[in-house]
Image 1 (cartoon, one colour):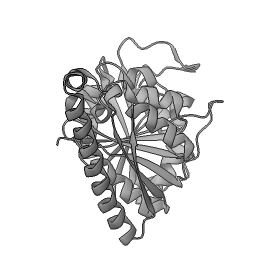
Image 2: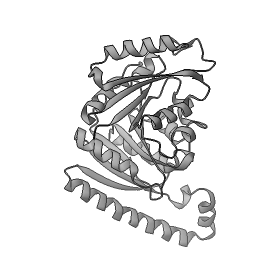
Image 3: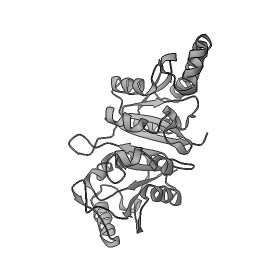
Image 4: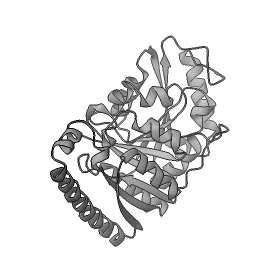
Length: 299
């Protein structure tokens, strides 16, 4: 079934750096595109050195001229300008994604939904919520150019409590790109436990150690089952259980494997709960130069 990608753009060249990689993905997925601009209340005069769009007509002209330059079938591109200035751009994007039945929202880590606005505070709660489509984040290169996205290897982080929605999307992309999947689970050590579990580990160290060892064995069984299924479908897959701080280990492993893509499952309205904190994605993107795929689940 043909997919539908929603690409919010703020008029800046940095936000447009997602387009080459997205067009390649769209060709492989036979997707149609909607280029979206949302007028923003109290918008600054410039954004990343480019003139900010303040009026409906100039936003429509901007999107039309941009679409004309894209090497993509014009009949598969739709243009959408939200005509009324919005104070809450993130919420408006979510509503448009629902209304247009988007299968994927593509964002640059810069622009009016840049790294800080997108990954901190209330934005994940408003966009990564019930029925939200996956969100694909692409980072410009250090000199501000468009990144190439022809992924050879993806690290898929699986969390026993967050479900496997991210793996399902990563599997589809692996089929289209011939991409290898490295399935990763991280089991904490007693030293890296937090909250109530850390207190329990101090009071009952032997019991907690046994519980963590059991969790590691259960995770290994699950990963082997996923690997065997993926390999039977023709996808090259490897698995790994690691112990320690999940964020630290995830970034270390992804960089060591020269991964092009990280895939995380998010849960509930708290955003990036697959790794326990709303700030995880921002910390990953400051240490990892590849792309990030966030797939929501209500499990």
